[in-house]
Length: 246
Ligand code: GRF
Image (cartoon, rainbow, N blue to C red):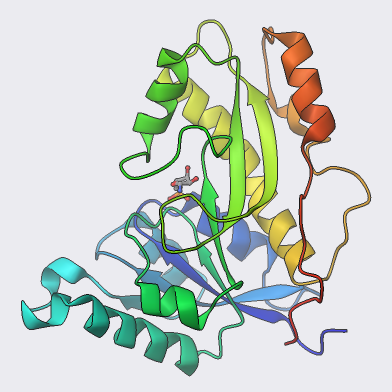
């Protein structure tokens, strides 16, 4: 049984709409299972920083490009990150649109406590260089009729760790990379907080978290049979055997 809200560190590199979903779901004052204790940004002047500041959450910019040559060494970046995580007594690290590879020392120190969200159904359409619109372009180029969002544990490779939860959405016949990205992002904003709640032990979903997905989708869904099959399989695949002790 948790004695306090799990403390999250959210790593960001962009607009931060997933961060916003976490700030909204885990707003202070509510009986929240988690709280955003710190935000770590890979570069300055990004939308995610403004969102964190508006919510009164401490932000640390650990920007490799702005560090001196000596400081870009992975060891030094890892040390800075570990110091920030310790300072804020972080229980769970969440990569939400973080475009750098997390240093191996950080992955090791927080083994089993780092989640990432990816805008496709891994293991398809993941790996180095697969981010942003590139992912959705690849999905369309492959002629896939289903895409979606995946939350997975992070290991030392891009997008390879154990899958925790997935939420499929249809690919529509007239989709552009942008329209598909928007449809996937809408479910990301529901999937990520729901998965964190499951992982910290606050909510053990009785039903797959995909149940609402079609309400977010407009238009005709092609490949209906394939989508139904995926919906039948998709769920929070794995929560921790023991809830995180906080
Ligand atoms: C999301 O699509 C996420 O899956 C991916 O990067 C994007 C971040 O968007 N890793 P935002 O910054 O949360 O709006």
